[in-house]
Length: 289
Image (cartoon, rainbow, N blue to C red; front, side, top):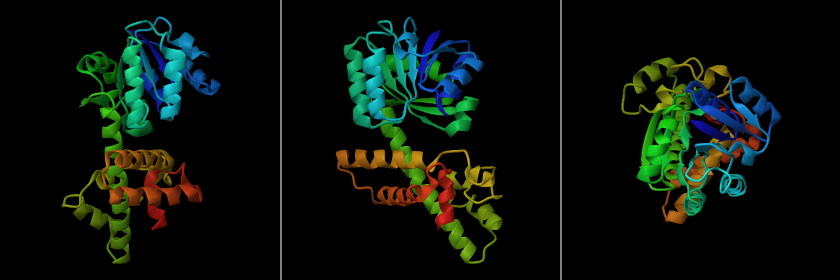
């Protein structure tokens, strides 16, 4: 299959490379020359114009920073330039309203489209083990699923257009809440004189167990290897967690939902980011407690 991939950053670069490994002919576009060069090394065909990259393809995959850019790229460089009937897959994490609007515009332009944000981070993008939460019609999901399977370990149809984004921001709001709670708990255990490995051994098999503890422990040397063991470098940047928490708060306001724990998590990550820690892994917030 001939696939255009737009957006070759930390996540998109690895995803595009995995499409090549799966045997697809990948047309790669990014504004950064270095990203295009890396994509070429991975077997992609680099393009310096997005409209040219999507010409003649069967599918377009995008991984972009925000909803405004997604809306702009699809209207300026995809609609009317990709072949009629191409399947469009936006894997960016953006607001639900924009995801639905772009999907509606795609349908009006004659395209099937899904929103398919990811969970898993840079390592999973490189390793092809991402989880995709997909919004779109049954027909669009059926066309998108084989492409997404080449980049991930789980592809789940969440519902209609925008449902993938809704699932992503709800999941990451829960993750932000859990990580703050996990960090607070370990710091309290430390203050109470508990050996942190012993506490991990107990809590990881008890009712307080959660992913933030057993798969991504914020304490160096405790649990499986995590960014905490690399001075909180790599993994999922705090600035990205803050972005997702802000999207969740925006969605909650639109839906008339009260989410006080999500709001508190957002406040904590806003302070952490403002202190210059946006590029640090989000579990590094333990150092502020």
